[in-house]
Amino acid sequence: MPKSLKIYLFILVLIFIAILAIDANKAKPIDWRPTYATKDKIPFGLYVFDQESESLFKDQKITKFGKTPFEFFDEQYNYADSSYEISGTMLYIDETFSIDPSSIDELFYFAGHGNHIFLSSIDFPTELADSLKFTIEYNTKFTDSIQLDITKTKNKNKSYYNKGITTAYFDEIDSTKTAILGTQKSSSGAEYANYVKIAYKNGFFYLHLQPAAFTNYYLLKENASYVPDALGYLPKKDEIFWKIKRYEMGTESGTPMRYILSQPALKWAWYLFLIGIIVFMIFNAKRKQRIIPIIKPLPNTTVDFTKTIGNLYFQEGNHLLIAEKKIQFLLEKIRYKLPVNKKTALKINVISI
Image (cartoon, rainbow, N blue to C red; front, side, top):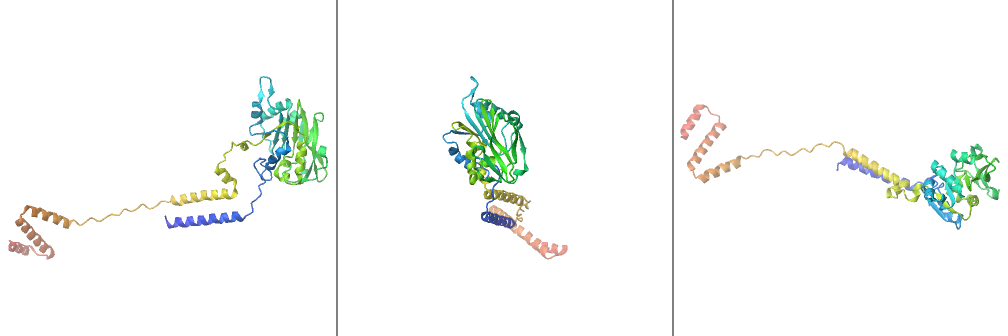
């Protein structure tokens, strides 16, 4: 491994250790995301509400479903006699109203068969507003803090809400079909309806504009008494059909990677690992010098050649020819080592003869 690469890896490891040390000693920030998920223990999750649901709906069966209301209730509809095979109260709590138009039509049909629909959200679509004849307005007086009251327990709940609240309230309602079940009061004294019950054919819609009241943040505070009071208007013996987020029904992947990305420390460790791999690949991908092959010098085969020739003459047994060759080599060496003219060379040749 190149020395420069070792240095980069060492620096990367030091950075990784430093980040882990800093993250371990750092206070974990509060996650204020309004997830409204039953598995979330963050302030605006519904974990506490889910854990307390059996006591809130005592002696009532609770069925959770992650499908759309259209998919869920349509499966329970008997087209032969135009009736539902189930009956009860549909429950939905979320900051964002994410029920699709087809499901809204199904809710109207379900309520028309004598059932009840409880919806808590910061706003409602025009399909609901037009059919149930209500309008929603917004008042800046509720941006600071509000006190939520239930009509049948007026002024019982003195706790104020200041986080996750909405400034929405019901403005125009059809008084012949609508009953006000709860109000919200600002610190300045302004009071408006935020919880109503609207009759629809043989059933009822319960519309609530402060879903934050059902979250962990307020159920773990002195505001907890508001929730059972608000749900006290629902029928006591009906089965509860609770519409929760689809991924909470087990359709979302539960792989270790999902858990790693859900934990800040593990998530940043994973990102740092990926960055380190990318840096390693970048530096390792630099063009390297091609290995220079070792070129061996040509071997001196003179001795081998001489041995081969000698063995050849030795095997033939022609000693005279060998002697003549030696004389020629000797004369050639004398001429080469001692430069002589032609006459001298001739004399040497003659003498040799």
